[in-house]
Length: 81
Image (tube, rainbow, N blue to C red; front, side):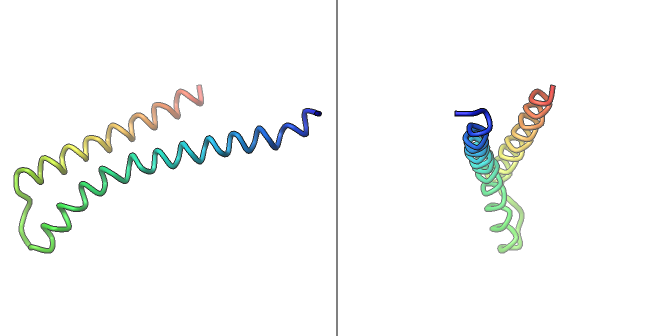
């Protein structure tokens, strides 16, 4: 098999890996976002603020998103180096 014939296979493997990676990253971001949006939407419908437990949940998941974003940026910087 020539080098050119294996190029499509390498491309498919890397594309598959990218798909899995982005699927996992997407899930990691969606979960905390859902846990933030839920209490906020409920409070908006009730026309009231969040209780302490809901505030803790929103704060904790906001920090999780921040951490995920930093890890993603750090990983990108490492990959480029």
